[in-house]
Image 1 (spheres, rainbow, N blue to C red):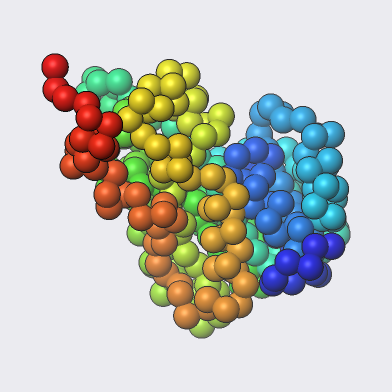
Image 2 (tube, rainbow, N blue to C red):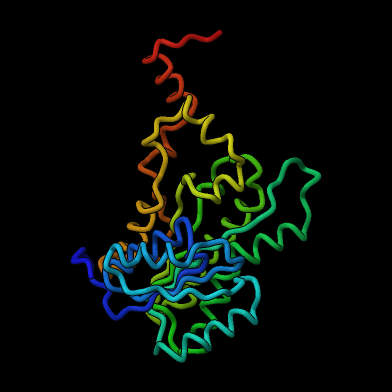
Amino acid sequence: MSGSFPDFSGKTVLITGGTRGIGLETGLSFGKRGATCILTYSWGDHDEAAIYKRFKDVNAPDPILVQADVSNLEDTKVLMELLKQRFSKIDIFISNVSSAQVVNCFEDYSLKGLKKSISYSTWPMVAYTKEIFNTFKHYPKYIIGVSSTGPDDYSIGYDYVAASKTVMEVFVRYINFRLREHGVCINAVRSRAIKTQSLENTFGKDLEEFTKQFVPDNYWIQPEEVSEAIVALCSGYCDIITGQTITVDKGTSFFDNLMEIYTRAQKKKLKPA
């Protein structure tokens, strides 16, 4: 096991959508500190051998990979019964899955589309928490909902995701109130765009190439930077922080705007056409 601080040996971490992107990096961040990670997935678009190798490379316990659709309550119940056979409790729960239709125009709006987005991006945080308690008779000590800056900042086609993340962040505050007597620490962690497959699926292949002309490479947030922030919130040293939405973005949400683009253009001695 890595000697990196803090130590999660003996802890069980459940991460939905844990086989790629932020979910996978979060598993690695906990795993290299000794935690046993359960990583769920829905569509099998991952390389199990590669995932096991990544955990082995950081001296982490082998993860447990389980297919379970977060929007399907029956899948959730089956998952919990499976985990009950191996573990006495779930210490940490990371609600990471997000899925929604890309919106191209106002006519794309539909109640069905919004409900689908909420069923994947919002409700699993509630449903899994309830089923963990029903199965283990204990709530996780730490619950993290993975959000984005979408509720505050416009992104192309992001309408449904932004709406569902907003609802999730509201639930974080209310769940904190409802479960305060159980000693639960729950927070949402926001990040700006990250170079993952999810980014390409949402915004298309050309976005990254286009942004190279206008955005310094160090403005991009790395998945491991988000995962390390999540670990910190679950370390026991930040328990006073609960019911909050924490933005992990190197401060770029404040200054990456038209004025900053103009400033960078001046430094490069670029002038308007």
